[in-house]
Every structure is written in structure tokens, then in C-alpha cells.
Picture 1 (cartoon, rainbow, N blue to C red):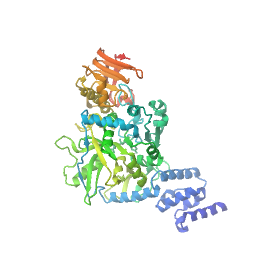
Picture 2: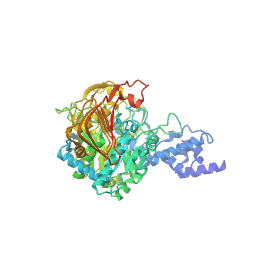
Picture 3: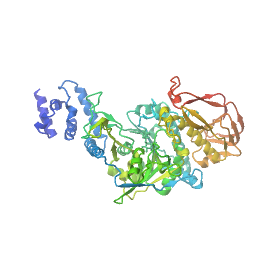
Picture 4: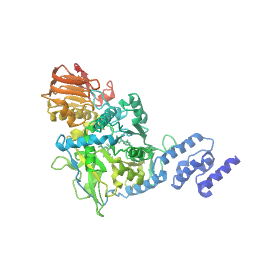
Length: 614
Ligand code: UGB
């Protein structure tokens, strides 16, 4: 016993706290001898930051000692994974909670206006030349997928990247993304005269998604990518806060843990910076980092042109955007100009745009103008950053992104919360700390080409106001068929008009179910070089192109056609193909006899008859 008393005295002196203070946390004092020197340093941080309540319920030494040590393992993780450590987290939280209590608007003093950027029209000459430039550049890019979110709004039980983007081929989002990156890599290397560059592919995961993402990759041989080309970076959750003093919340399920919640996709910057990857990429001659989200099946149709815009305009930051419907749940890209002369082009999140507009002389708030759209382009959270300036900025900030807090107060006094809150951050807030000299731009593309995320469950999607997008598994899949149909139309194929049909109470346009592997065509020029003569496709048709050198010539399709081609074999597809084809059969999302992946889209495909060509 004498030695434990000695060691306690030693540790109290290490803490630099006086006996009076120590006696205010008697339960901690009794247990101090159990802790290592590093753990005592963490105690010091917690005491200095007013967190004595965390130890109030600690029992005598000998009871739950392993749990007490595990508590400090968690505190160590929380401390090391946050730029500036826990003290900085608590300090920032106090400031933001005080602002929130005072009702301070984070945009105070800023006047919003509509910024100017690059607006592209699919298929015109400038679009084609931006695509060409983008493919050339892409061998100098790294891709970063943020996939740490649980997708609570979708309510799907698996990870979102494992969901089929479309059910004609059953290709999941992750497979589709990897195949696009590999196809871009190959095309870009070819343009560079047979270079062997490998495009790095990073996935940010979280405790909610990490294991399942790894399993998905491993059980599918990384979908053809070299395992060494893929890096998973796991974001940690952050501590929850119980009150305006930023007292850390004790986990309701385990009194030896601090309750934690996700910090948001903004973590990606600090993780990339601390991983050392950015520096390696710079040394390897890379120039671009492309960030994207988990469930947008159209995204890669927009990548070549938007990267071309970044390279041509020398943008340090390029946000991809689409025309936005007022009140749609996507942020608005906005120029904010302060009375003191500061100005920035930044995403204003969808829940903040309306109050900001109302407070600054736009009494109707977030509304459409005469074009039927909001004047503010919609942020689809696909960012292209130039690597050099990005590293320069992160060396100053360590990757810390401006955070926000969104407590749900019990009453108007704003003194207590309904449930614990935490700080959050968003990756698109990165430009907030940039100097005015930074070249921040954006690229607007048609929604049909670039944006169809899967975020909403069937029930909520069915309630979306008429005219606004559903953002459901149903609309996400139909958007892929529509985009492919429209692209082929533009290339001269006679693609029949869609029919309207309701699935899971959502009315959607059903176009022919056309899909192709990315290696078949990445750009509009690729498509045009693979289609010739008089081709036509009826509305009830399905076409799947799996090979690289597949050429459609005078093809008339009314039914289902699958074209396989071994690696470099050239396959010419022509003449009339007619068969019973594949039919869409409605299913109800509540019908649990149908797999979840299928029933959330409201239809399944009955594969009645098809023709295969090799
Ligand atoms: N994500 C993480 O990786 N970690 C986290 O902690 C949280 C999320 P949501 P939301 O699609 O265009 C964003 O939940 O609310 C990943 C933009 O903020 O789908 O719809 C997650 O896995 C908004 O401006 O985000 O809003 C997913 O891949 C708008 O652009 C991604 O982050 C909108 O997306 C987004 O998570 C959009």
C-alpha cells in the first residue's frame, strides 16, 4: 500500500495540481497509481479543461481496473486524432456553443450573391476539349472517396458503396468507381505514350463502415485494382458534449467511456495530411486530388470535363455543381462578401441558405427564379483540389476544417440540450481558410449527366415535393439509364422516348436499360467513335456492353442484347436484334421476402430472353 501512496503523490506532482484540487476528485485520486505517465498527462488535460465529472463515479482501486485503463485508451485516441488534441476540441466547442446560444449567425456581416463559374453544355466543342484535357491530366490525380457515413436517411442495413448502382448488371457503387478509375488510368497512360502511372485510390471509412468496406474489396479481389493502389483511412468519431460548458458526455451504455458521434466528412483533410500520402503524391509528380461521395452513379461522367476545367483555368479548388432546385437538400455555391471587403466562394449548406438569404434582403429566402431553379448552383460535393496549394494550406492548418455545432435545445433558455451534441465539419468548407489570392472556382453541368445520389429511403422519397428529385435507389438507377440513353442520342442513335412509371410511389422516367463498362467509353469522343450508321433502340430494350472494342453499326435493338468481348477482341454489332427481353416488375419496399437491395428500388428485373454477342 505504501508504494501506491508514494506513486499517487508522485503523480499528483506530475499533474501540477494542489492537494485541495485533487481532493475535489477523490475517486480519481484513489486510482491514480493505476495509470501510466502518459495517462496522467491525459488526466491533466481533462482536469484543466473542467472534466472532473468523468471520474465522479469511479469506484475503489481493484474494481473495474481494466475498464479504467480502457477509458484512457479511448481518451488517448480522441486526443491524438483531433488536430490540437482534446483541449483544443473542448476550447473550440465552448466558443461555438456560446455563439450558438447567443444566436450568432456564422455568416454575420456577409452578403450572399450568385458567383460566376464555368458552365458546361454536354457534347459541345468546349465540353469535348475539356474532356480531352481531363483524360490527359488524370494520370497525375489521386481519387479520394469519403465513405464513413452510415447513410441514416437511406436506412439500408449494409454499407452504401456495396449497393448496386443499377440492377441490370448488379454492379455496386464501389466496383463502378474502381472500374472508372482503372479505365481513366489506362486511357491517360496511353495518351502519355505508354506511361505506367497508377492512380492512387483512397477510401475514408469509419468504425461504422471500415470492416465491411475492407471485406467487400477483399472478397472481390479489389475489383481488379492492385490492393497496393487502394488505401483505407479510418476517421475517428469525436466526443459528445452535454452542455454549454462542453462537458464531455459519459456513454449511457458504459460509464467508463465517453460518448462519441461522427465528426463529418471534413475529417478527410486532416487524415490525408497526417497519413503522409499527400507528400508522397507530390514527390511522385501528382497534381490533383479528387474527392467524391459514396452513391452517385453518374459522377464519373462528369470527371473528365471538370478536371479539364481545373487544369485549363488553373483552379486551386474546383467544386462540381448542378442547377439546384430551391430547398433541395444540397448546398448552394455562393459568393459571400463581407462589409470589411473579404470575399469567398463557398458552399452554404442547404439548411443555412434560406435563413441567410432572408436575413440579407431576400425576403422570400431560398426560392427558384424565372428559370425554375435556384440562382445558386447546387454543390454535389465533388471537389478537385490542386495538390501543391492544398499541401501549403494544410501545413498551416494541419487539415483542421472550420467546424460547426448544432445542439437541439430543451427550451428557449438554451441552457440544456435534448441529447448530447458534438462538433461537425464538412469537406467542402476547406476554402474557408484560404487567402484571397486562392483560385476558387466551380463547374456546372447538367444534373442528368452528373448527379443522382442514393440518399433517401422509399417512404421519405415518396414525400419529396413534386418536381424535386427523389434521391432514392429508384431514381439513382433510372438516372443511369437516362444518362446513357441521352448520351447515345447525342451521338446519333435513335433512342426511343421513356415511359413514366411509378415504383415505391415515385414516378420516374423509364428509359431503355443501357449500360456499358467504363473501358468501352469514358468521353463523348469515345462514344462517337464507337457508334456509326443508323442505330436504334426501343424503350423496352436492355443493352449491356462489357467489352472495350465494341462497335455499334446499323444496329436495330428491340429486346435484350449483351455484348461480351475478350480483352482486345474487336466486336462489330449490327443488324436487327429482337427478343422478349428483360421486364421490370414492381415490388413493394415493405415486402421483406425480396432482398433489401432490390426492394428499396421498387422493381426487379425478370430476365426473360436475351441475345449474347461475343
Ligand atoms: N461521410 C463521411 O465519410 N463521414 C462522415 O462523418 C459523414 C459523411 P451525406 P449530406 O450529395 O450533394 C452532403 O450524409 O448531408 C460521407 C453535402 O454536405 O450523404 O447529404 C458519406 O459516406 C451537401 O452540401 O451528406 O450532404 C457520404 O459519402 C451536398 O453536397 C458523404 O460523406 C450533398 O452531400 C456525404 O454524406 C450532396
